[in-house]
Length: 287
Image (cartoon, rainbow, N blue to C red; front, top):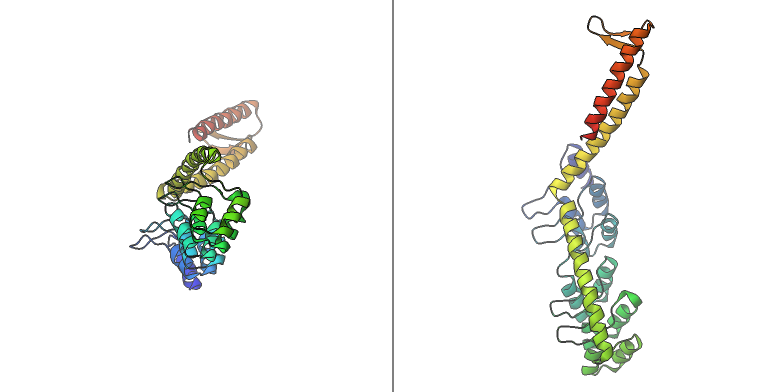
């Protein structure tokens, strides 16, 4: 009910208010595929990175429930699928020959070479099963996928395909640059180790950024920054007004009055204005 949401927001309800499961209006609208409500909430600063009690954010919900229009809205607002089990989800989709889920996850920013707890990737599973459709999808990504990921026991997708006797899969992987146990594989492992360390570092940085940017303290800081910006504008206007009012002077006897043009009064007005601007500048710099 978009109209009801509008009324609540108009009456000051926080769009990031959560229920007992830490689920926000954005979570629920994303689950149901209500693109108009999602767009409205995002325009009112609903947090697309907020996670519920189960560790899911709104984009996770939109993906799980198959709402591509909502997924795009959330992606455009900076949402990413939650880190943690994306490798497992990719491997499961490959094992199930679920090309649609794989495609959706890749479109939503999941690394197609993301590994599970055994360091196995979707390409390993597709090769083991000899699933040509999934292999074609993954290898079609070109440089976007690691053709020779090494699992926990040192195996590559090409070795999996060979071991299970999938000749077409073997040929596809070999044509794409797949390798087996050799000096070339050792070089691959060394390069992957470096890449994995770099990726882990980036993931930690992304997680910290998501956690900090989605916190209550961060939103409060943004609100303070907005207020300070408004204050700065008002201060600049006040400084301009003081300069324009060089011909107005304040005296204990008469308060504010226009000068009659005497030299002493002009000097007094100038001194008052400059002292005010000096104090004002010091106060602003201390903010």
